[in-house]
Image (cartoon, rainbow, N blue to C red; front, side, top):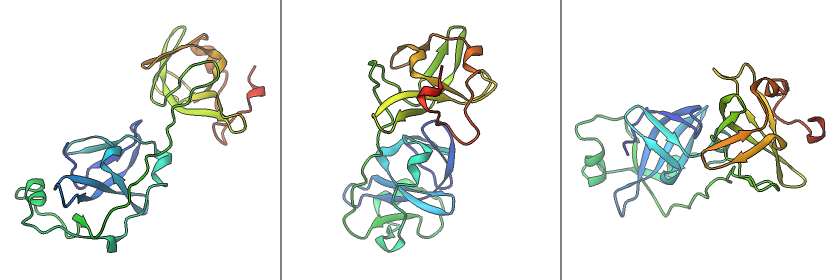
Length: 214
């Protein structure tokens, strides 16, 4: 996995978050242990196990955009520049000139960063709904699950959202009652695309009380 300084950082669903600004090595193994990203006006520390894939241009994370703000901020005093002759640096940038304080070692033991709460939730009907899963109506595919919606009082799924795109003219909210089958690769619905588009998301956000869905 090639994590490049300056590469674009995207979420698990492909939404742009920012860019890679620094790489932190484990001094005992010389492997990349953390990636520092610039998200908005802050730098955040991402453990390598939250990175899904990376190449010279793009670094995709395994987390959603909403999780990024919960990651620890980069604090420069907790790191030091990795010596240019150490194996980690020579292997990472053969002949490449990078800005100072780009390739780092931690100055002390690192605190494990807990993985973010999973957005995989099982509703009472036995379905498992996961963000990013393809969704198919009776008349064809409509997109992927964008956000799982839960009842904050009963801790169960009430539905999920699908964003507009080439297959949908508007953002929609799908009640869980419209799911006929759900597997690891696809969610099948019992309604048509036209029926879905009759339930757009409200302008203020994705939440719609369950009782308002007929």
